[in-house]
Length: 623
Image (tube, rainbow, N blue to C red):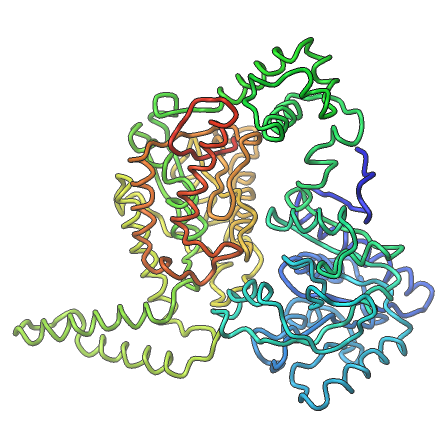
């Protein structure tokens, strides 16, 4: 496929894991090559969720294939300021927990800006950092991530091409994006120390990484747009040896992927035809059945008309293909064994509340499996409120002469312990087990209340509480055998014919992606052998962060006004996530507002294309 519009060479891979293996392999090859020459290698390293996969693969290569880091010197891009090295938010701690502690690197060869520098010494320390890079021979390979604004390191919009390591005030968007890690934007530092653009461009080779649908727009802007100080990543276009590594989701808006017919002659497939005609209808603001030969000619789609003989033939083909995706209650499955896997205790009603209700009405045997506790997304004030309720209830029962109450001294002792911890708690500090349990129970009770609106009961809920999530921190452990075993056991027990799985990869902390990883591994374990029972049909849903495009969806499920209202009512049952969410992602609207606008928007899109008009609609992909 033509890459003529891309000003930075871009490698698109299928998954986050593929990206990690590709980049880690390149780093490993460089380390080994230099070791064979008895020469050191200097790596520039980044933090954040995207590079973690690369670091895990490097650790695997060290442990299983003998990759040594003894000849490696590292320089990290940045650090928050002020920031103690011991803080769970520090990049110093991040790097040691996610890479350095697991390999044989010499600590003296690790360099990370220090968030503990005093303001008076920052300038001199930054100059010394630059001098240390020069003394090491310069950076051989620089690893980068990319922020929503296109920042690399902490080089915010407005950063100059000649900038060097320095202190910088963080952009409001950057601080908002980091708010979840700090349990509130108010706790995010306002300043940071970062390598400059010129420092980064001085590296001999640069790899910049992006994953997820939410990065697709900035990837295209950085790769195909003009160089602009407002988007620091565009300066990489001037570097002779930079490669962008993206997964399918992050690369989805690149011209060669989104609209390849604008670049070169292509081989038409049904999927491309659907995308092209839908794009043409949107571009011309016409219904599909009203597109003319001139519309096709003016938008580089003559070959599509030539293939089918006339515009009317193409229009009808695509119109019917979209219409066939629409499935109401009467055409949805009946009497099936179904598991809805919900990563958090609200993704079920947020993302698939409409079809969940229809499946219940069709007498399917439903089980909603909540994969994680979601406890880190509960505010401390909710814990205080529930503890106050328990204390008041106990007091009332004792005052009325009831014996035993609901726990007596144990309730008081628990309340005192919880209050003492919360009074002394620092922002982002890991909760004590009692608080974690209280937050888990709050979310479990909300989940049951939510599915009761859908016509289910607590007997239809399973709380798997997968181990990978139980860190008490925003960042989780990798998916392990214990996680897969729990999911596999449920599959063996319930023998589902259909499973719903979150396919939304834009979750800002990757829980959806990790839960899908556990489900995929469990499905392979349970149904991989030829003697295994029939493999269930997998329906992928989105919605908490983004919706499936109508061109990618297999099933479009319409909802009436009453059904959408019922879905919103179920979302409202998740009181701890209402009004103000700890993890809003890139969207400040409440989940119910996103749902209402997104589901109505999907229906409106079909209406604009000339198909039947519905009030609202959900989208699913069957794999």
